[in-house]
Amino acid sequence: MSAAKGAKSGSAESYEELREALRLAASGGALRAGEALSAFSGGGARVDEKLVQAIWHEQLLFGDRLETCSRRPLRVIEPGRWNLSAGPDFRNAEIEVGGRRMRGDVEIHVDSADWDRHRHAQDFEYNHVILHAFLHRTDRANMEQLHNGTSVERLELAPFVNPDLDSVLRSLQAEDYLQPQEAESGRCKLALETMDGDLVSRFFAAAARRRMEEKIRRLEVQLRTDSADQVLYQGLMTALGHKATKTLFFLLARRAPIEELKAFTRDASGGQLVDALEAVLLNVANLLPPADAREGAVCTGAPMDDETQEYLNGMQAWWSRLAGYYEDRIMPPTKRWHSGVRPVSFPSRRLAGMARVLAGLDFRAGLTQTCLARVRLAMDHDPRSARDFRRELLQLAALFEPGGQSYWSRRYTLGGKPIPAPLNLIGADRARSLTFNILLPMAILQARKSGDAPLEAFAWRLFENFPALGDNSLAKYMRQRLFGAGNGSQWMNPRFEKSTQALLHVFHDCCANNALTCDDCALLHAQQ
Image 1 (cartoon, rainbow, N blue to C red):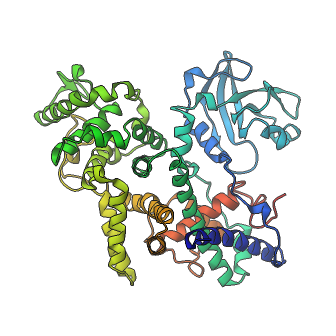
Image 2: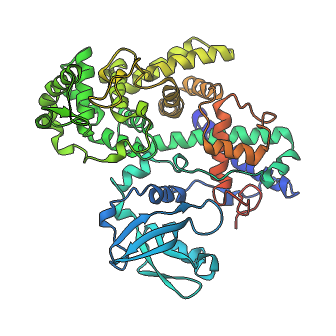
Image 3: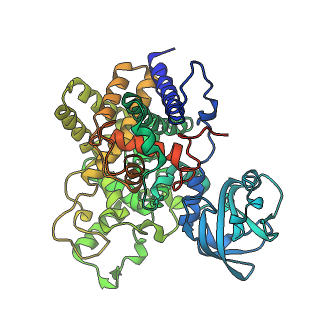
């Protein structure tokens, strides 16, 4: 076994063994040598049910086409309140089936057979369900039976996912949407306080590494069909998005793939290259008005200012040369580009920033190799102290924080009022997130594929020393759940991002089945 493979399998195995040791310690048992851990394998490719719930919650569906399994038209008026505790997944939803409006609960599954598998028909808590929605249909039933004898409609989601199922599954994560209720301390808090501190510390360290391994695995799956440059490019693009817009950024990366960008811009240089890339990305995203609609007014009907007109002329000059390659791939117009997004993060600004990132990284010579060369340069600097690592990580993050001025540096919208001071197209926080979530897993993966053990080891050192990114609701929830008023600093250092990653992994692995009562916790109870 190679050193790289050994490190990978070792970290995965240790997480499962440590979780089992904690579970047994919490129940008064002890880990026995050679005890089977098959109940905790967690390695299947099954779609996360929480992701299917996110599809329903955000209505990432072609809503005007929905049809139940019994072939009745369905309209979703209100998807309902996402329920993270026991019972149906969405409460107080409102739908219309065959012209009849109804209000009640909606249950979500990955597989249509999960309704019977979970014995919901024998549970009176599901008597208010008005719809069973699932990703895939694996049987021929058209209706579900409730405990009270009522029949309710079924809906297979996969045929109606917008823009398509593959893009959604490859670009979204359920945690982008989950908003747990205010947490109380779980039973795990008392259990952890009575356990060996070293064991708990090792468990959280292994959880953090396992989560990074999952990021690596997602990239590895994409490498089966795409080049390393395309995988890195679409990973960076996707990570520029916010919640549902991640799917749009991913789809744009597929419709304007990096190898074509290399070929079609081969004659452009310097600022011309940035303009060419920006013209392609914004036009394929359908975020610029077509040329025949540009005369006169933009936004609210006010005449275009000179700067906006000059910018559009420059974009049109490049688009007129390149449009023939992309006209059949222009994305349909959608309000989702801006839904729930702060103006500073509007997609036009992000894409203008990505055009500068690609040009700055000399992507035509090889995006992945350029990025890996910068990681190797950091390795050559041989950082030792926390300050050394912060310096090197800031240098890596700077790869994704484009400098210089742009039309979009002082605008939120096309033709909108200029803002007083220029703003970064991709800010420092997002650049650091791209470094941790995309660059580091790609560096580890490429090091493994090439047998470069020193590079892989150094990338893991960057992971270990990466300062904490911005907090999110799940991490805050888990701190309260596991540590109460504390922050778990006796087991892990909250100043590093790996502590947040550990909490997120434990949530999905142990708490996501029932985020309120601990009744289904995989840490405290053996799975059946």
